[in-house]
Length: 110
Image (cartoon, rainbow, N blue to C red; front, side, top):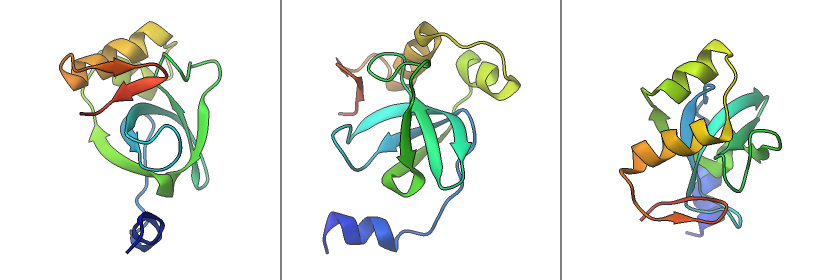
């Protein structure tokens, strides 16, 4: 079974603002992002580094894997609609990763 078939066979899961997701397709595959907005079957993603809050990545939800709802100050700010900075996003993802390696354009898992 190819990766594309695996993605299309997955049941549709709804993301929420402030969820952390991992990209499973595209050049950003494996990187973690915060969901900052939802537009139908698309999510707007930002990590504060390669994809800044001012210019988020628009990606189909089916091309992401939801890591989960993170309990952090950054997630709370996103949920409440408060101003979130790129540094907040980087800090939130870094705390989630436990200080693992970072790569240009996003947090690399692994």
